Amino acid sequence: MKTTIVAGNPKPGSRTLDAAALLARSLSGAEPDHVVDVVTLGPGLLGWGDEAVTSAVESVASSDLVVFASPTFKATYTGILKLFLDQFAGGDGLRDVVAVPLMLGAGPAHAMAPDLLLKPVLVELGATTPAPGLYLIDSTYTTDTRIAEYAERWGGIIAAAAAARTEAS
Image 1: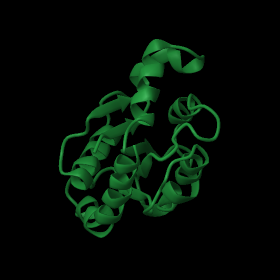
Image 2 (image 1 turned 90 degrees about the vertical axis):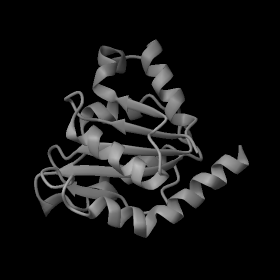
Image 3 (image 1 turned 60 degrees about the vertical axis):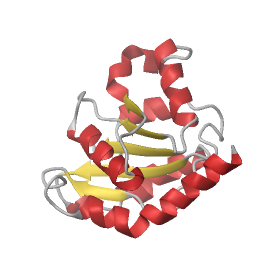
Image 4 (image 1 turned 180 degrees about the vertical axis):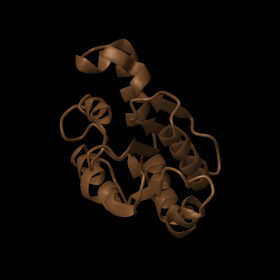
């Protein structure tokens, strides 16, 4: 199973990236095969045809499982993540990719954001999202049990969906 994480935080090497890696490891049992720290793609996100952006898009589109992670900014996912998602062609740029929406925030007020805001755009791009998104408190995600509980509850369903994609390829 090819696993990728996409972190849409305007700060490189962020807690968002770390949380996505922890979740990907919990779901797959291994280190992610690819890491896209979107902010490192720089101004190439503002146009079309940038080599690094194209390579990142191809890595994501060819993955079996992708954790899409964003901090909560103004009650939604970040603009930098939106710029990256805009790079996927048409309505099927993520066709058959199993996606897990993950968002972090300072408090529980936006706990529904992964399902209400990030999941619909992933589905619109063709991704399969067989489980609910995950919302984490950015100050406690390394010490609470939310990632482990999520992986225990939804890991089998997510792995089965990703395996089905692998078998179909």
